[in-house]
Amino acid sequence: MPKGYWVSAYRTISDPEKLAAYNKLAGPAVEAGGGRILARGSRVVTHDAGIAERTVLIEFDSFEQDVAAHESAAYQEALVALSDGVERDFRIVEGID
Image 1 (tube, rainbow, N blue to C red):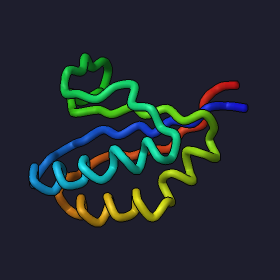
Image 2 (spheres, rainbow, N blue to C red):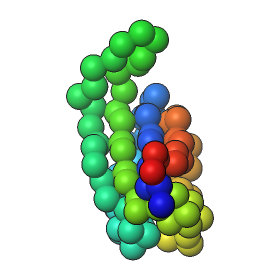
Image 3 (cartoon, rainbow, N blue to C red):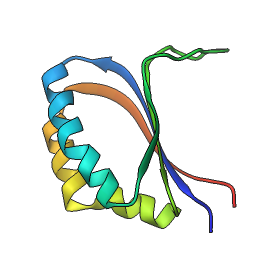
Image 4 (cartoon, rainbow, N blue to C red):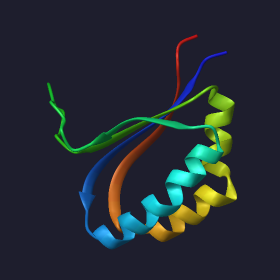
């Protein structure tokens, strides 16, 4: 069964307090959903049309587990806390089996 991944690239962070509130709620929600943070940081090397921005990579044992974690009440609460505090490119990606 292919793994699932969350890939988030933060284009702008306009409200660090909202991001901190989100992080406080999102971490436990991701862990409860079976997610493992593989990478989180601002140290990024870009190529081609890439933009050096804060990037987060989270792995789940399956794509279905991945989607369910995003839809969970706990993670939805984290998104409410984040609201308009950032502009990010967030993707749920199915891995290669």
